[in-house]
Amino acid sequence: MRIKHITEISKALILARWKQTLVAAVGITFSVGLFITLLGFMEGLNQLLDGLVLNRTPHIRLYNDISPSAIQPIDMAPEFNKTYNFVNSVKPANARKEIYNAEAIIKKLNSDQRVLGVAPKVTAQVFYNLGNIELNGVINGVDVTQEAKLFSFRDYIVGGNYFDLKNTSNSIILGKGAAEKMLAKKGDIIKITTATGEQFSLKVVGFFQSGIAEIDKVQSYASITTTQKLMGKSSSYISDIQIKLNDMSQAPVIAREYEQLFNLDAEDIQTANAQFETGSSVRSIISYAVGITLLIVSGFGIYNILNMMIYEKMDTIAILKAAGFAGSDVKKIFITISLSIGILGALAGAILGFALSSLIDAIPFNTASLPTIKTYPIDYGLQYYSIAVLFAVATTYFAGWLPARKASKIDPVIIIRGK
Image (cartoon, rainbow, N blue to C red; front, side):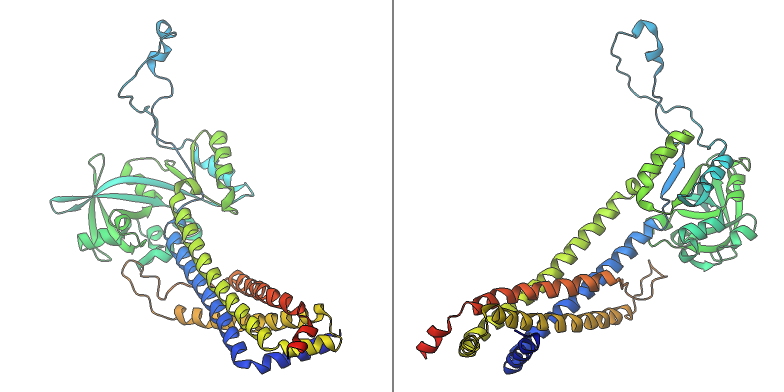
């Protein structure tokens, strides 16, 4: 049977019940549109939430961890070699937090083709002096240029210029929460006390807001030089080396390699932030499950409409088969009807999904904890459109296949004799 004839007959049957066909197509359109919108919004939200931490987290962190001595003094005594010792209150080893020969390690890392960039860091425990009250604080000494390049540092600055840390000596960018407690403004001079009891005056050149309130109440930033001065350390003192890789998925393997190569402790991003990845995966699974359920429900609608069409058009089917149409031709006619509804509905749904996503993306989203976010987050990934359209077409095909198979088996003699 020629394709032209099958197409013409399919078109005639669709137009004969155009209202029901339109209802089925609209069902597919809304299902695909909502699927795309739901996935785009949920993935945009995942990227926003994970970005609050993952953007600020190195793929690999090299440092000297504080841990107990692997071998205790009692284990070295020959008279206790054949005994089992119970040692309580094991104290950590007197290890240095400074990374030895950090400059050579950074040079070696920068020559590794797998490494996108390296940022040294110095962390100092301090107290913010607020009159007679001392607030706990942490000052991160960073290389401003590398921090902005690798960790989107500038995106979290809500007041001032991050580059002033490099240009202004003895300066600090305060966490927003800490600044509000101290009523500090840009240009103010604040006093801090180090863990050794030394007091220093620092000029406030800006404010930092990560979106996590508990961090912003404690954490602040200064240049590496300023932080080394606060701690009374030399210019070679580095406590952390932060590494960004070209491929984040390789972090666990490369971390173990660097741990052995440099004899340092290495923490990869997957280990440090496993809970965030788990939360994102669960939200994505829920979104896909809801979206696919919508598409399957639409498929049942098409199945019911085609079943009714076959019941009402049995005379037409009998005449077609009596005129020489094979059962396979009749099956092709009804599958063509089903696929036509599915394809048109899916394409219209893709347009609707983009329109709804754009509408949500334009809605203002104002919150004090995320000042850099102005509208609701949407991910316009093409994969959501592809999955929705392909699944919709597949669903409508199978929804039409069963009724088409039923129509192909109709015996024209029985139908005509019954009439």
